[in-house]
Image 1 (cartoon, helix red, strand yellow):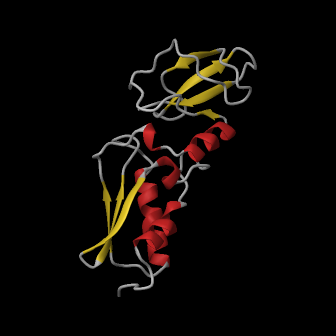
Image 2 (cartoon, helix red, strand yellow):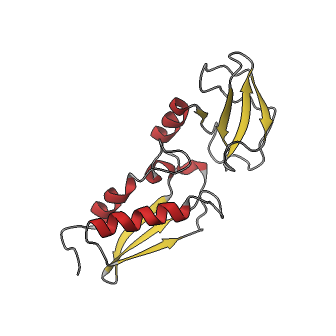
Length: 163
């Protein structure tokens, strides 16, 4: 049965607030994971893009999308994981970067960053705003983050790597 009361924008809005399981203050819309919802061939085509090829959050996100759609009686949909165009930190909304900082994760410093993290760059501490920081590890609590320490407040924090 087709739910004729909902257009593609409504469906997009229904699922856009699904939280990222690794960074729950961000939604799949904030992150740019939710790429598109369109009506095609008598069903909704929903496209999501992982932040990394083997992103462990995608099964959770897919299940949440299916749950919400089923809760609203939407049965006519196709959920696709698309890899092109590839996800990048350019897709993070301004609000997402602010949420990251407030959550204690330094947001990406630039758009379209090189994939290799430059240890000489001074990442701003999300807690005290100091630029006196040091890279501890290329890998933080998840693959998309690096681990830093702040020389000013002595706190350890994650930096959301550009890619």
